[in-house]
Image (cartoon, rainbow, N blue to C red; front, side, top):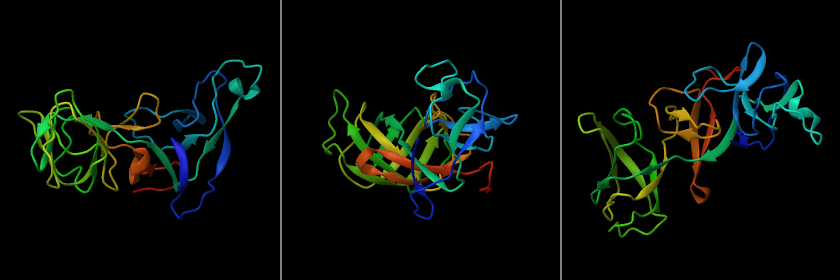
Length: 223
């Protein structure tokens, strides 16, 4: 994740040094927590209050060009109100209608979870008959999940019919705080329905990114 701005619009956020084990590997941009007083990568499905996002690499191995790579300190952007940018999740449609898009890969999110979010068409399937141009964005007015058929249905503004294989960027609604962190702990992925300690607070359509900030933070921000 990359620092974007603070909740009040400020462009500077607190970055401070924290203790880290010499052999711990952390990448710049990873969401991190404190474990027994030491910086560690957040768990993909963790609910632990976050400390922030790493502001530098710490490979955990000696590097002649970077003595901090296996040092005992690491810089972390730790402002509780810091907002970060990351790539938005992408889903592949199974079909749809003039007013719906369906998918079967969203792991049973609850009805209405995505209400108020948006779908952005970014790629068409090999046999797609969808006549919407790439870049079409539609607001999600309703979301439902059919557990029998494991089908997720997004109700959207009327337009062309989505086809199997079409790919959509998913911009979850403001306040959305479900899913998992990616394997690299620097983005949101929609592979689980449990709550996470981060929430969506905005979207950037031009770069297909979402804005996220702490939902629960070690230094504050409790809901």
